[in-house]
Image (cartoon, rainbow, N blue to C red; front, side, top):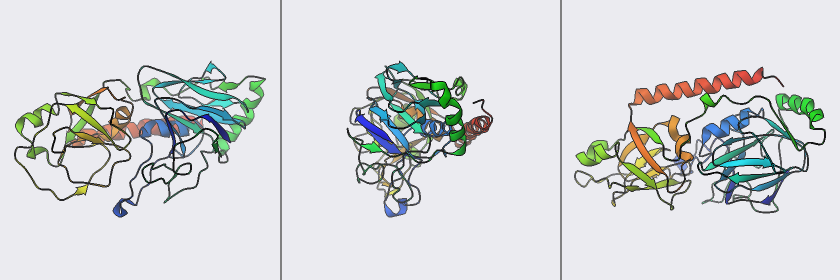
Length: 333
């Protein structure tokens, strides 16, 4: 069990998402940075989409009430156990009673805490993800609060082996970290003002020539009104060539839609299921983790690629994760 001493700014339980219910108007939700969630879970022997904690901007203070194998992934915060810095992107065995907190860094937005066995909260429609607007999923449908007790599931066989072998190394220490970790070359390029790759959207040709050019040349600032539903962007206004009437149609994570005021909205994990605004671009799936780590005030610039290139990049990312998965099976413990 994990006791929440201080919840931080916004800490929620998220998993791989709630799929299969969009036709009923239920959003997918899930981790904003799916890469970090998957890797944090792999490093503690969980299924890649297991429930973990998504930590936004200001970290929580958590006490482990039992021996726990954890991994912290993502960007924006530096974790510590009992005041001692903890390395990212590797398994860490934490002593019962140890306290995990976080020190703010200058860039990055979201961290993921994977724990062997996962956060054992009830599933709603096949997912443990918290959907705050509807108050469903996660821990009582809400962000964590001080005094919450998070139950943990039973660790998998690999994690149990690691915990049994490393527990003797604790010898009064607060934690023991693996001497190895994820190769930095496998990680997304988290930057405060990144370029992200995007394809023309379904209504790209309905925009005027300047908008079609500027969307792939100009910088867009992420406004403070942004949240898990979408990033509201400011910068060059994007105008239609002429007014069009649209019937609402399906949207997805990474869709760049443009309301009548010309300021685009980039839809993210908690996006609605349907949208009636014209869509000028679609961010490549492989770059969504990079987007998730941009803070309000950060800038995004979209670089045009074609669908085949986006698919090739995603296949490469999945191959990298597959190699990591295979390597962990033979990792020296």
